[in-house]
Image (cartoon, rainbow, N blue to C red; front, side, top):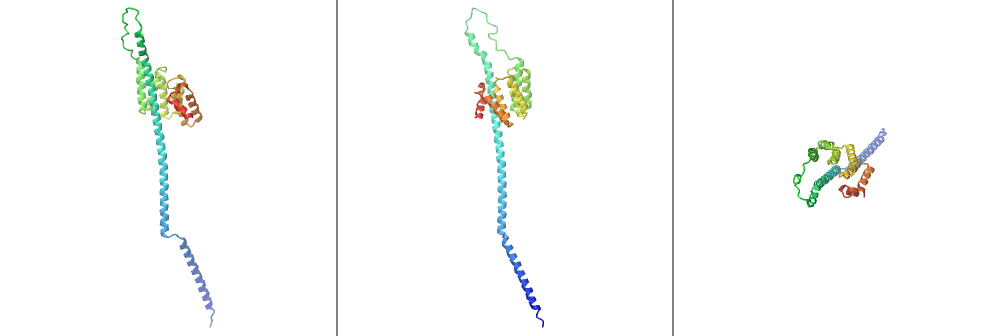
Length: 258
C-alpha cells in the first residue's frame, strides 16, 4: 500500500490554513483601521460646521468692507455739505458787507450841518439804484448754478458757472464761479481740470475769499492721488497763510499737519 500522498495532503492543508488565517488577520486589521458609522457621521458633521464657519467669516469680511465704504462715503458727504454751507455763509457775509457799507455812511452825512437854505436834492429821497441788468442776470445765473450743483446736476452747473465768469471775469461773482467750476470738475472725476481751474483762480485772485478753500481742495486732490509730498506742500502753504489762519480750512490744515 502506498502511504506517500498522505503527508502531501497534510502539507497542503497546513498551507491552506495558514493562508486562511493570514487573510482573516488582514481583514481584521483593515476593519480595525476603518472608522465606524458613528465616527463617519461625526466627521461629516464637523466638515459641515467648518464650511458654515468659513462661509460666515467670508460674509463678515464682506459686510465689514461694505460698512467701511459706506462710512467713508458718509464722511465725505458730510464734509462736502459742511464746506458748501461754510462757502455759502462766506458769500452771504460778503454780500451783506457790500450792501451795508453805503448805509453806514448815511448817518454821518445827515449830521453834517447845512451851509444855508438849500433846495432839497433830487437824489436825497430817491431809493437806492437797482443793480445793472448785467449784474442782475449774472446773479440770477449764479443762483441757478448753485441750485443745479446742490441737485447734483454738475454739468449744467459747470456751464452756468462758466457763463457767469466769462460774462464778467473781474466781476463780484468771478472768483466764486471759478471755485465752483473746480468743484464741478471734482464731482465728475476730472481732477486735472479741477487743478487747472483752482490754479487759475489763485493766480487771478491770490488773496480772494476762496483762496483758502481752493488750496484745501488741491491738497485733497493730491491726497486722493497718493501724492503725499504735494499734499503736504499745499497744507503748509494753507496753514502758513495769515489770511487763512482763522478759516475752517486753515484750522483743518494745521490739524492735519500735526
